Image (cartoon, rainbow, N blue to C red):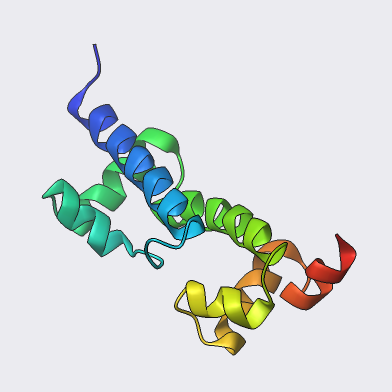
Length: 113
């Protein structure tokens, strides 16, 4: 039987993946932890603490690598500037995010695949 904390972490992960699917399909923009906690009707700090306790990783350490995979898929069909707009990032911050997690700029990645 799952504990309440496991249920919270599982719900967070489910909502995170559903949201990323919606982002990939152009139905929404990137969501913040605050948005997910509101959907779950729990405090943002409590959600963060529970997810970290159950998974061993903070919510952003789970979200950002998953978001990077979505971004990489989108770059196969779109320009980096278009993907930045889809993600609700300004191009400079988008490039910083992408380079921090992939080791290359979005343009370098796009040309390498």
